Image (cartoon, rainbow over all chains, first blue to last red; front, top):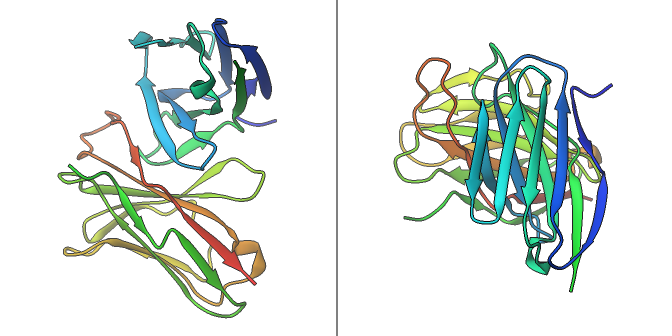
Length: 111
Length: 117
């Protein structure tokens, strides 16, 4: 069993829909990252959080430490949101760079 | 402020040759991380360095792989005697100075796609 599980693996949505991507992890963590990998391969850091909720534009990330679960929400989705979304955790006691990655959720938003 | 830079973007090597991948962190960042993404697989941590010091190399293969981040110049990930299984995308990221257990956002480079023929 992977230490970081994401669901769904693949997601197709219509433009304008509200999207939720889930991440569950099995280890104690000190931080959780959400990353976006573009079709061309480049990676952008979206959020880093250790508690509560963060919002940036149409993106919202939440984390529940007790339940070991995080969600990434996209409101009013757009075709340009099509990408792979990756959850990664820094295990408690681990070094800052030693992240454990989920396998990603491939999102396709249709116009 | 230029982002994290990696070169080359694409590298083709024959089996047995050496591959050198370079990473220049964002200005002001002194911590560098290397990750590998094998085809159809997720990202895996390789090594974490600061200037002239390896902080965590627990993800590095035991043989043929090495990394450095000298006082001057870019960080280098070196793969000796490459094999076909080394074909992957190698990403570098950088962050601000680490203080204790606090985590900092990482900024990723565009990656180097290594193909071993």
